[in-house]
Image 1 (cartoon, rainbow, N blue to C red):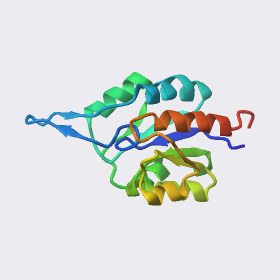
Image 2 (image 1 turned 135 degrees about the vertical axis):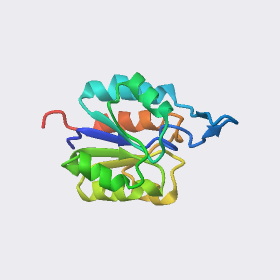
Image 3 (image 1 turned 120 degrees about the vertical axis):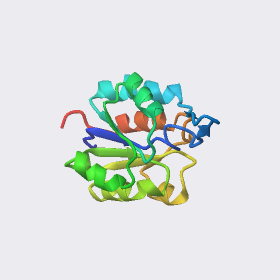
Image 4 (image 1 turned 180 degrees about the vertical axis):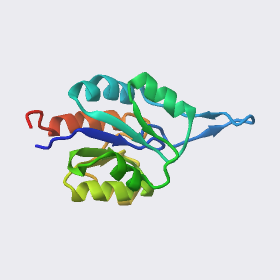
Length: 160
């Protein structure tokens, strides 16, 4: 059993399907799965695990969705996710991470090396799927985060 204190999540391709809709006036829309939201707000947070967002894009949409879900630690516009992860978390063995693409790879490898846990949506790129402790049967934006949270909660030790 593992002791996990943080769940770090990517957004595009993980909490969303990875599509970005841009209108003529520059509006950007993203679709989030309500099942993922329920998993974060009603399963993860009550279990004592702190949700953290580290994403390469910046969007008010992400901030608004995080506010709805009770995610206070949001880091947007991060090109070097590994450096940000090291800045905000002291012990990588206490981290679970879910991501879907190459820009998540350095974080995931460091967490694996520290004996943390990593997972990905079912449609993550091959390099991510190959190293993941858990590959969801759901794609990004379609319940993969909720699926990973349920698996994660079954894997952790609340008594440590």
